Length: 282
Image (tube, rainbow, N blue to C red; front, side):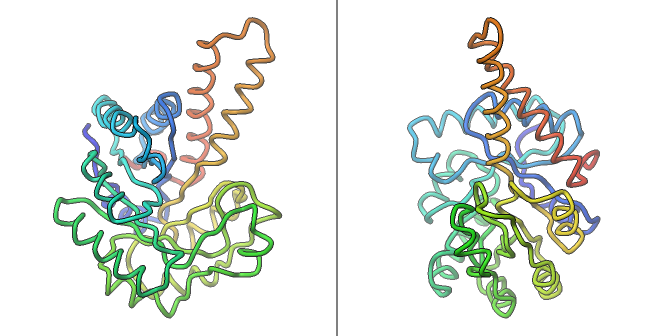
């Protein structure tokens, strides 16, 4: 089926207590593994491209490839911009056929984040595209001990209602203790903060920086109100380790390595689809 916005599926997930996985891709092998996983598990999902990827010369072609491949599968799949850095980048993604975009103004002053998010929402809604924003700031795992572990960047629950009302954003990424990339130390999630935010707004809530969290942390976050979870680093690390194994084996070849990469993504995506409770929800 053609690409579709993930927003209706997020509403279902929020109401029924599971989470939609969002997997970042970089190439054909990763993308194929993701499509196969979603199809095999009969699950809705998001295939995402990081904002910086849109500045590559092949970004339009990769986007077109994902759009075309989606037609060969019978599950609802979104193509989403992950961490769009500017209004212009979001508009570029929309012009490439993305069904959902994330504008990330989380490092800006609140007023500027609101203004820019509002501009993106207005333009995106005009053409039927849904928007995610970030309030609070999810930092990097390499800086975790000096940032997230000290509760820096956490979402202020007192600003959430105002932010949603002012921007009319469709779903919201929040900072409750996760981080992007490999953690320096162990992630500590503030589930009480998540519950407080969940009690104040009705939009689906998103958890970024999922790689490195435990299964119990994922389950607890979903139970407390998370409806979408982004995974990237763990997928790439898992596939990378598989490629090293193949390269050290007998008669490694380009074909055996590319097939192994695709299979690694398929298997690891299936793991997260099952863990998040999205299996059979398409």
